[in-house]
Every structure is written in C-alpha cells, then in structure tokens.
Amino acid sequence: MPTVSVCLPVYKGERYIAAAIDSVLAQTFTDFELVITNEPVQDKTPDIIATYSDPRIRFYQNEQRLGLVGNWNQALSHGTADLLVLMHQDDLMQPDNLAAKVAYLHNNPAAGMVYSNIRQIDADGTVIGGHWLPESQSVLDETYSGERAVQRLLTEGNIICMPSVMFRRTVVSDHWFDPRLAFTCDLEMWLRIASQSEVGYLAAPLIDYRAHADQETSRFSRGQEILEYQQAVEIALLEHYDGPQPKLAEQAYAYLRNWALGMAKWKLKSGDFASGIGYFNAWRKIRMITT
Image (cartoon, rainbow, N blue to C red):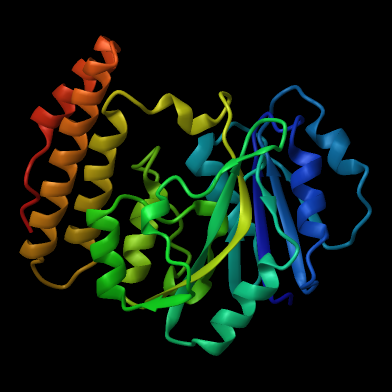
C-alpha cells in the first residue's frame, strides 16, 4: 500500500491535466499513487492520460456525471493510502510538496492535517501573487490547536487552500466532502478535522494555484458564497461538537456580517450595482447560528 494517495478529480481538464500530472510525477517523495477520476464529457482528457505509462497512475472513467463534490468524493473513495491529498486538475505541486507534508505528519502525530502556503498563477502559468489572504499566512511553520484553527476559519475566512492539504484518513473515517455544500464543502471538512485534532501549516508555497475564468467555483459570487459559508459553519457547529458553542457562533456571525456588508459597499462604490445588491441581500439573510 502506498504512503500517500494523490486524488485528482477531472472535469473538462484537457487544457491543464498534463501539467498537473507532470507536477505530481516529479515529486521527490515517490511512494504515492495517483488516482484520477474523469467526468463523462467529450474532450481529450482520457487520451492525454493514456500517454502516461507510470504504474502509480490509476485512472477511472465515471459512468455518469457526478458533479464537483461527487467527483471529489469519488476520487477519494478510490484512494488506498492512509494519507490523502485532493489535487485540482489545473494546479501544480512544487517538487518537495509531498515530502514536506509527509514529514510533518510523521513528526506530529496529533495533527490530523497539514496545509501550506501557495502562489497564485494565471491561465498561462505566470505567477500573479501569493495567497489570497496574505495577512493570514505566517512566515514560519506552525502547529495550531484544533480550537485555534476553528477560530481562525470562523473569523478570517477560508485560509486553507484545498490542493495544499494533506490529511489522515482516520480523521474523516470515509465521511468525505459534504454533498449538501456545493462551494464550501472544503471549509466544512477543515472545521470537522479541526474539531478533533491539531492542524499544521507550512510557510513554503508548495502549491501553484491557478486562477482563471473557467474555474468551476468562479460561479459563486454576489453573496452566494457568503451564505454557503454560513451553511458550512452551521453544519460544523451543530453536527461535529458534543455541546453548544455560543462563542464560536457569535464570532462567525460577526465575521459574516462584516464580510457581506464590506463587499456590498465596495461593489456599490465601484459601480457594480448588481453585485452590491447581491451582497447587501446576503447581509440581510445572515442569521445567528443557534447551537
């Protein structure tokens, strides 16, 4: 059994999939399997994958369309290792990505997951910036208590970039991403893991995160992303804690209200009235989570 399962769900991936696969195969840590699940669309993705002969690659063609969260879960369900990574089809790993995270989890058994800093790249691979929340990223490696990790996620936004995460199978127990959440299923999982374990952070930007117009998640805007953020927080606080968490609920409520109102003011000031109204409506709908 390999040490790590790198799970790569694909949907219309022909433009970037080869670069993503190449970055995984170029890892300095080599004891991994690469599990690829492809949605049934007419493109060249299967042909591109067929050009690789590396025995660590396991390719599965979905018989029917599963959607974003369904395909993520399908990929994870085919993984066999105790350590799991969910890679995006359009992102890239730095060569030491797996090695650094395997070493961290080996040395920190109380941590259920570790994530790293990232760089943002554009459609052509040019670096256009660092993490989308640079003020939240330490210049040093850190280990957070679960309580501190939860508090940060509730008051600073989703500071954890999906493909930068490596997590233990034991902290999810095959309960993968929540299908009730189309946009914030990753946030819910991070909160779920942090409710029971420590969380590690590596300051090196070990992932290149590609920002482009065709991203599946780019359709969540105008306040919809904030309302689903609230839903993810609500699920986490109500379903993954043994007792009430009123302080966390209050902190989440204040953060979401400030986020929505700030976005509404900014969009209206910039002349984007449709988005401004959308964020204002989201601000009106945000409710206190009763735990």
